[in-house]
Length: 258
Image (tube, rainbow, N blue to C red; front, side, top):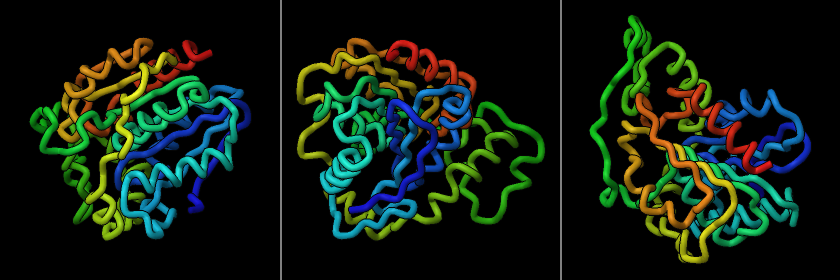
């Protein structure tokens, strides 16, 4: 399974995994403004199978997606130490990779990660809107689902959604994703091994009505070097609703890794 990906920079590999349905642009959009100010990092942004430009092939489970990621890591990174970031479902996969490669992964960062895999099991707040600007809702095009998740409904947040999120949603292979979701849980559950002692970062949105924030707190004993932050005025699109706080937390995480 050859995954489509983009890469930027040179140096220590940084693997960034997007969430369920979008593509790599969700991660480049929020991370490149941060890493673009730094040197010494080779950022790798793959499209997960069935998303973006990566075909699903015959993959029918999260185990199949993990197998594709292992192959990608072996080809692009080899046995070199690397940093790992994951957003939403990408955070679930990142937790699985850390369980498999704790010595190789020097640091783990997660943005709005999935704690409880199944939606029915999650502790979730109600969706609310806390910040708006005049004219934003009136500027929406027919069928745009920006308001479904947006806690911050500003022109800047809408522009980021249109550049980073919406294009990937339009490319998703929904039939393949439905097939994969029937076997969504990893056979080897994250946190099933020893605690991960690398510097970690867990960022959650206080108003995240998709993955929430409460389900991540019980995982903290497994990540003894984790900063766990719940950001107010942030939903599941935390990366475009609180970009300056994201920048500060990621840079501090990189200092701890370094």
